[in-house]
Image 1: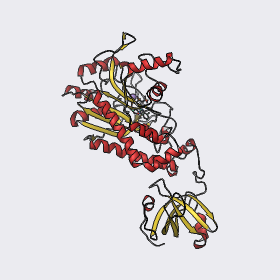
Image 2: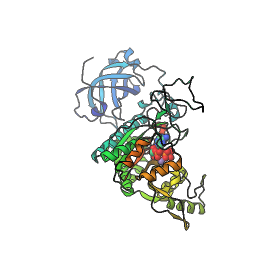
Image 3: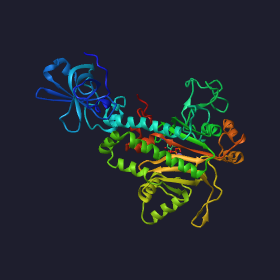
Image 4: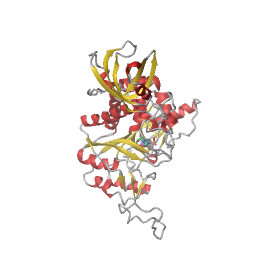
Length: 476
Ligand code: ATP
Ligand code: MN
C-alpha cells in the first residue's frame, strides 16, 4: 500500500482540494452496498462526523471486502472528491484499503440504539459510540476550560494528596488504604486495630476533598485550585453520585461571600460558554439524540443572572408552596437539609434558573464554615446560628457546587471542632493556618461529573466518566 501521510477525519472533512490522494485511518461505523459499489462510514474519534468511503467491489479482493465489517479498523488511501450525497461536502473514492484490525463478530456494538445500562456493561468499548465519543470529547474540553479559566485569573494549580490521614468533613465514608494483612489484624485490648506497623504508621484513607490542603496553599499563594480524583464510600446508588469522582476546588484568600458567589457564577458560565464555543458539533448531536432542551438550557444559563437565596427565604418559599397544595415526599422545616425535590422545585419551577443558596443552619453544614454575625428570623422568631455556605443548585442536577467562606478565627474553629467531637489529633497542621497569620478566605468544590452531566444533557453520572466506580462496580 502506498505510504501517504495520514489525515485526521476532522481535518479531511474541511479540505476542498478535490482530486488529491489522502490517507485516513479509523473504525468502521457501518457499511452498505448497492450495485457493485460499497459505502463505508469511517470514524477516527477526532470528530463526531464520519467520512464516507466509496469503493468499487470489482477493484478489491473479496477477502478484503469480507473483513470490512462494523468495528473493523481500516487504513484507506483514496481520492478526495466532492460528495453528491446530502449532508457531507466531500467523500473519499477508495484506491487501496488495508484492514489493520478485523473485528470479531462478537463485537458488542453491532446494534444501534443499545440502552445506557447495556453500554455500561461494555464500558471498555462504549467510547466508540457516537454519544460517548461526544461526551468524552466534551469532558476533555471542560477540563481545558477549567484550567484556562483559573490560569487566566491568576490562580495556581495546586496538587493535593490522594492518600490522607484526615477526614475533611469529620464524617465516615472513606476508603481505607492499607498494606496490612486483613486476615490477621492485630488489635489492642479495646479491640481497636493497631496501625503502628501499617505502611503510613497510622490509619490512612483516600481523600474525600482537597480543601484542607487547599486552604494551606491559599493562605500562602493567595489563590489556588485543585483538580483531581476524590473518593467517597457513601453507599448512595443515585444518578448523581460516584464512589470515585473528580473535583475542582478553588480556594481564595481575602474573599467574602459576595466575591465567592461572583466567582462561582462566573466560573460556571465560562465553562458552559466554552462548551458552546468549542464543542458545537458534539452538542448539536446530543441536543438531537439525547436531550432536545440541551442547547436552550445551556444558552439560558450563560445569559441569566443566578438567584441568590438565603436558606431561610428558601424555606419560606417551600412552605408557601406546600400551603398552596404542592406535595413533597420529605419535610422541609427550618433546620432540615433540603432534599433534591426541594432544590429542584426552587430551581426548575419557582425561579426557573440556577440558585445560589446561602446562610444555612450551622448544624447541617461542615465545621469549617464561617458563622454569620446575626441569627435569622423565621415566622417572627429568632432561629439557630447560620453559616456562610454558598451552594449552587442547577436545573436537572441539584447541587453542582458546594462552597463557603471559612472560619478564620482560631478560637471559634477550635470551639466548633470540640463541640462536634471531631478527632483533633491529626488536624494540627490545618489549625496552624489560623495560628500563624490567619486571614479571611473561602472557596468551593465543583463536582466535575455534575458539570459534565449538565453540559451534555446525560441523565446518569455513570455515563459521563469513562470507567464509573459505584457500589458493586469496579470493572474495567
Ligand atoms: P451531595 O449533597 O450531592 O451528596 P455533598 O454536599 O456531599 O453533595 P460536597 O462535599 O459539598 O458534596 O462536595 C462538593 C461537590 O462535589 C458537590 O457539590 C458535588 O458537585 C460533588 N460531589 C459530591 N459528592 C459526589 C459524588 N459522590 N459523586 C459525584 N460528585 C459528587
Ligand atoms: Mn455540599
